[in-house]
Image (cartoon, rainbow, N blue to C red; front, side, top):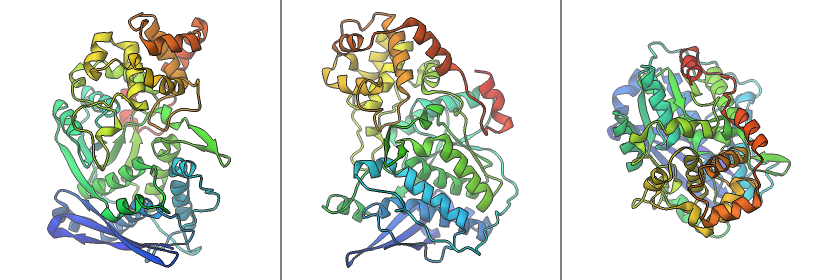
Length: 442
């Protein structure tokens, strides 16, 4: 059994503590997770109690995913939280699809596993708030949030930055953007990591972008922001592999499906006055990389390598590990647009000359297994980037390129057709009218 026990606000230390109880095979565990928000104590009293309760209840349910997945118990108790049937279905979807990679990696049959309780006669009307304005941009520290920030700046749209457990990478990116960043601290229960190292428990990927969305919803309500702006691209909706009859997508909580679900959940059950959307949703990864190459001032400080953003033992000595699929993907795409010396200056390593990375590049190009479980673009984008890079002949003697050229003959006609597909913007989706002109200008 897993219980979402409740939350406690501590104004003295500007924190909110979320509590959970897990009972399995006669073993009982208690967990607490803490969120610390600047100036929480001075802002929380100005929020309608019912609205604040809705937001904090939702955050309690979202953060609980890290602890529930330890043993994936079938029975859940939401304690004092009463969900409607549509609310329960939302949480069933977030847990099931958001943990798709986790279920795949642990060979768990997830069919019917997640069943949030609800009451058929429950009701939850959204609560309107006045005086909301301005935009809150989620700062990731990589190329995507840089492009979002610079596009907003170029169109004179004011915004603030927020980050969860801000790293040195994100602080440096904010500095170059001439912005300060609101640093929200998330402190997980240490017992979680202890149990992760024990046999009999599960470990794996969670939908972290969904966590960001709910944390930023709380910030928006506390600080009166109207828009929460993410930097998730169209490519994020492309899955990795099929398992148990379902598509498994490492980036599901960055997908268009999640964006729609989250926006509808907030509007229907929390407040209609906060809007969440991704400014880059109509664009594929490769178009975003092309845009990013305009902003050379970020080259020395940005990083998309997840080793910099780990909760435990984050990398600090270099910006790029040079060994993971994310590094390989960004290296490949940048090499399509930048001269080799510029790419080398960013990575301080030639990834095309590392034989150990051949299998990763093959997966990125769709030549082996499936797309890596990382935030990377589609195989078609990777193939076009390789084709574009090969025309410059800068890496022809490198071991990876020799291998890939032999395995992937390039058809110019097919690549030109692919170019039209991957550089054409899709529909504006649900981008608010205020921001549509920014994307139209690209």
